[in-house]
Length: 448
Image 1 (tube, one colour):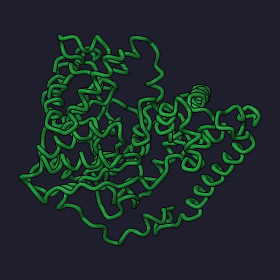
Image 2 (image 1 turned 90 degrees about the horizontal axis):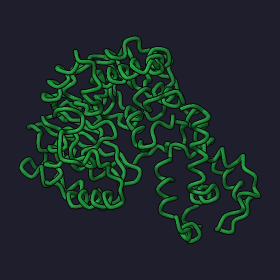
Image 3 (image 1 turned 180 degrees about the vertical axis):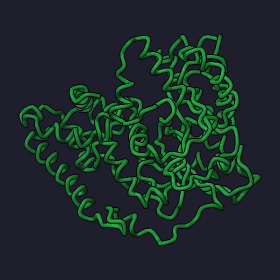
Image 4 (image 1 turned 90 degrees about the vertical axis):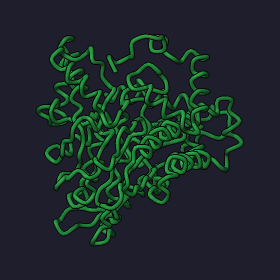
């Protein structure tokens, strides 16, 4: 996304919320709640506010450039100069946080900067070899889909102990109860082997100028970058996106020997091949240049990975200060595929590649692949151990997308099933469901 596009996006989102409304809500939503909620479009404004947290810092910078007299045109009756004062105070607080973080950096034994959180790690981290530790990040909107992911993980689990950690910023008590119920429901025959814990994200994404990425992405996608310092007691952890479905025990993937590599992941080979083939036909080599020149990946078809299923070597990442490198790269506005590109750029040369069956992507159409790749791609789809709907074609919205039958079969077993049906019925009534994906016929994405 170019600077011009980003500026336009910021202006559009600010206009939707109202610059004054945004500043007042962020400054003290409790004190001014009556005035804030009196707006007829309060819910839609709040939705934009929550989904765009990664841009809050830039919103504040933009508001500070506005004419105070124009900011007075708000329905809350708050003077423009007062709005500017609030914005300046918010900016000062954010700058103070960043300064505090930078000044608290220390040097480790190799002379590299490491945060206090990492330095406070016990000399011998808890070796979680006896536990399969899995990390998720979710908000209220994605909780029902995570419920299906959890159900599939537990149903296909083996005899090991599992610790499932859910990072969140906005997750209601009701959703936490329902997710716990899923673990109890599916794990009743293996009581004591599953531990589910919720951890509120202690770091605000507003303190970072992360690349905006796609509109459909939430701030939770950035949480995985903080895993090395958030979990100093662990040597490794398995990250799973909430749009995945297990078909086997993930303990096998967790047991992969990574040596000193920082991550273990699957190549996004077919996805890249499809994108590059489309570029070749359209004679627009923009993406090819991006992979090679911006990310420094010479052979993207062989070396670029998808970050939805990611085994993190936390010990090695802490030793090599990888988190700081990732955070720096993620704030580069040139990142096309958000944090995934940052991970690929930083971790090149330190990736242990695992078989693509562990991240069976449904993000590409078989028909877009060159003929020589289609047979193997079809075979890989049939043998996948984890299904991952990485693109916009999600099984809960498109019942004919590849693998959706398995997803819905698992969804029926969760307490979210009725909620999912209700959401889809509402979407159909509002005309939000794409008709070409809901007609009975051949599954979208090629043969399943």
